[in-house]
Image (cartoon, rainbow, N blue to C red):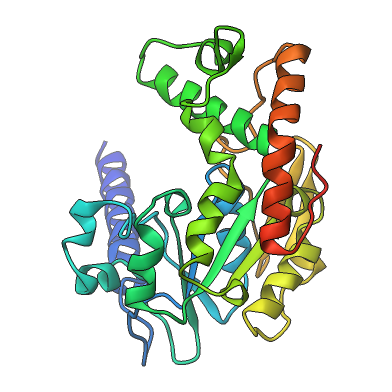
Length: 293
């Protein structure tokens, strides 16, 4: 019996010591790296919602000269946050060493009317990344996310058709539809920032061939080429690319890549037809075409 008690005490002691080691400041890595500071972001991913902003910031964070804010800050679009001031905004940024670029992403920025001017006032030289997807696919992803969020909160669900259609026509007041009218929102940004400050990332191409899109991002940001093919591997189970960094592998959260709802072909046709003209306006506005239906 005494031997059992001694063994249990030894086990408890070793486990407690182990927890203490992992809970120490050094092991938690809470201490900022030497010569590092927090500062205003050099890069802001402004959107678009359900365009692939999380994938983009995770991939950009593979570069050793980039550090990323972990959460969406909502500084420029939420008045309650904006009133806290620039010092609060800086406090939400990660520590960066000299020469490192800081990036934050908040997809709601793209469609918020007052955000472009607020960012310009803070930093007119900010480099902006906008990732866009085929508008109908983006709308379906938008609906799918809201559907699952409401499901988790046990709120009443509405079918996509109920939200999207009104008296046999598309409901132009449906927020998910409005978010896919890229030219409407882009016009505001280009009235404040020159086109050269905004880099467009093809969200559909980022899914199919992430490296090619990330090389363009590196070039826009004047980063030394560093992201390479070894940073990506295709996960057959999930059906999309995951990331590999210093032998550590990680995939995006399970909430990403959810299956879209089935939509009647006639409704899909209405959406493709509806977005055709807005898409052309967007292409002309940004001087670039995308391979959209």
